[in-house]
Image (cartoon, rainbow, N blue to C red; front, top):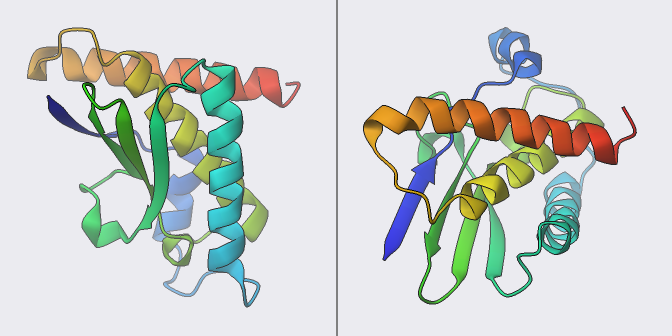
Length: 149
């Protein structure tokens, strides 16, 4: 069974960033490659921490136009094959400083992995908002613990 679950969360830190002018902070010349390496590294870390090592999970940067409106990421998975793809917003689409963008990409990865953990639960339009709220809280708590906050 194939599932696709867009994230409908909007982070407070990004609300004002989206309202800024279209030219964001200057990025390093190799920003896309650095962001992808960071995303792959953080995915491996969180995949191990969340005991999802038996899954083949990849992370891909996606343009905002490829994501559902008001989302920063998404995940699609195949439970039978134990494979998944996490989509994080492309670094070029962010209006945040480079380090804050990397932190946000990590939050998106953790958020999507929590959705994967919950993949065995029944899902409906009615439960979507409740699940999204719970996933946001869990992802925030995991990152706060990891970052010593």
